[in-house]
Image (cartoon, rainbow, N blue to C red):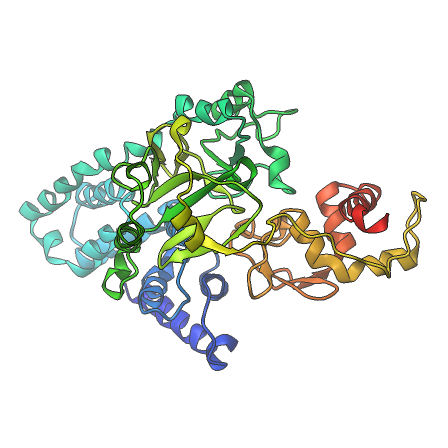
Length: 461
């Protein structure tokens, strides 16, 4: 217990010395993970208490649903990976509190710890270290542990399989589903859309763990699939449930119910009677609507109610961390976006597809070889190239590193800053220009040249 507490205190001191804190800026989840990694490496569970308290105290910017899920999964994976070390600690503590206990008594304590090792809260460690009395009284050692026999019910969900019938509905509509690993990484680096499939055979092969397209993803049973709603004339209203923030008015459910009442939405567009609603794994909802025209929607309708149009959405029938996305209604019955709701969602009559960028200063030639002059002329347009390649760049210029192999978690928490001529990864402490990124994504420099020129070809006519 004392060791863990010291780790937590060290973590808090590390945060206080963080440059963002000193400058009065808001911390991000990425900042917490960097500090934690410096102190405990991959054993993030050792500072779980301090991390969660920091997040709950609103010292970190509001986390998205994906960030919350990632933090939760990271801590769970850390505990599972280091189960052996945890149980060794349990054994040492048990022996320290009751040095006269025989081997069978010690094993009972360890076995009870194993039974509770899948719980979200590692309560078994606290029970052993903070409660020495049960170890001294034989009659009360086992009864408290027997209560955790409910665990088999709690861990039944991880065996849930994707709902193929629901996923088939997407394919019937011509929607290409993009396979994603359970922790959120796409099945392969590069443009996500290029990995989408509308083949039921490929879908089934991915679910079975056999991969697809020359064994891509083979060995991993894929249960999570995403799609870009805007590519198919759809927009999704994402109602989040920030339970911890309900008191501050950020419960997405209440905010949405208020909105639909104000706009007097049709019955098939309201949450309770919606004809195509998906229940998410975090207790929220995805409401599907059909839309027309090339317009740009705001990212957020009201607090905790996001608008997903150009951003990917987890498909119904998918399974994430043992929990399923459940469809109510049918994809054949997606209602049209009501005009009143549409007006409130619109950011402006701006096309969602990237506008052509005029580059009069790029000395383009039709030769296959790229001159040094032309190579340098493209470098200032790294940001545009990243966006055209499917990278999401937030308002602070942060995006995912194109080199996920440099990161322990595949850079699930964006760590790269986009500058004028180069992208800098804080984790790898390296900078990359447009040609480094293009070569990485396309496999060779020759393919990179073709891709860059092709993406900007409208400007070279």
